[in-house]
Image (cartoon, rainbow, N blue to C red; front, side):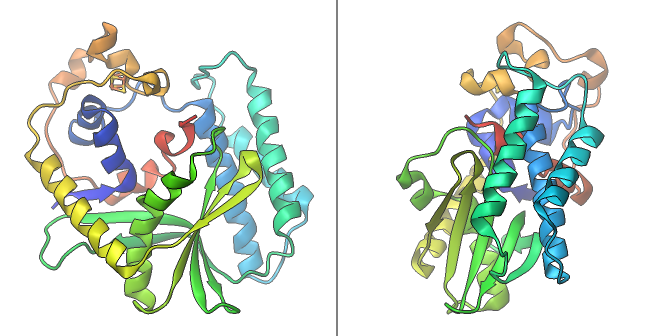
Length: 286
Ligand code: SF4
């Protein structure tokens, strides 16, 4: 049994070589994170902390939210962080502050019915299918007025994708399969993306037929991954943010000897999965 996630599937589709180093050989990345992923992680931390307070009946002040973001930024700061664009780190920190101020003003008084944050879910694709898919929902809401569930996701990337991307988005649609299993197939689910850099909220829905089709697509993709023997690199614009670039052969680099000896396929344990969220790929696409 192999444990898959949206980012694992995405990684295979983006670059098979990176997929092999990260998920099959489990080589620790020479670059721990990019400044964009650090920004995304700290914004997520702050909003998770904030909504946990809301669930417990207290709405923190805006200052407290920014304080939480700031302390998360300092605690998780890393001198070796990758900064691709020629901008000071402080600019990225400031961006996060602006995201949270805009979000706070737009969404108060925060009584939309938050049930859970960072909700861990298992997605069952088919009875007896040997592989599992796991995910974490940023925020799950029960919208009492409309009697439906909402899956919320925060995005800190600069670019706002075209509308068609949201209609085809796989990640939140996958998560809705698990929520339907938990709360019933007849309950509608709205998928909501918060594009913080644009102060925009984008919504989409999926029919049960579309979700069934998606399950089949994911099963086919996983079967293809399981059968794959060749993992060639795929040079692209994303290489500049790749945490394995210093080990990548397409850039004239190589994997250090100590890792070459230990390249064996291992099961993907849950701790590694948890550490994987949030991932670089989730935040950096620009
Ligand atoms: S640097 Fe580019 S080609 Fe190399 S592993 Fe990373 S994404 Fe793949």
